Image (tube, rainbow, N blue to C red; front, side, top):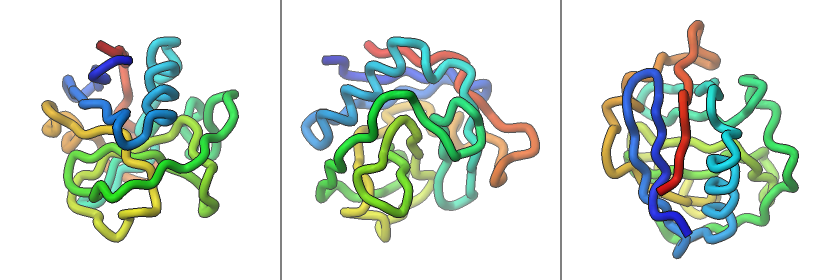
Length: 148
């Protein structure tokens, strides 16, 4: 299994350490979608200062995902702190699919409710530089996603 997810954003390079020890099914999904090119060109449709940047919806609306089935939650004790990558979902558990978010700041109130699958090891400045908004007027995007 891959160790890292590398995101080339239009704001810079981001390296994410994958955490299959916490969420093996979610890491497998992220890896599969990145390998298939699913994330290439996808925007960050929701970027809230002091909270998080969310992307992974091919429509850019936050209302869609991949054609693959939703995943069963893999909640852990891992805390949602700055740089943590976690799966987005509806208000129902077991609905994560392809959307994910990167914590811009500590968001420990999410702990135990969302599946943590990785952590940014370099490039947080590129995540911080994403245009803000829900949605941003001109959203930042993933130019290329690769696994290594």
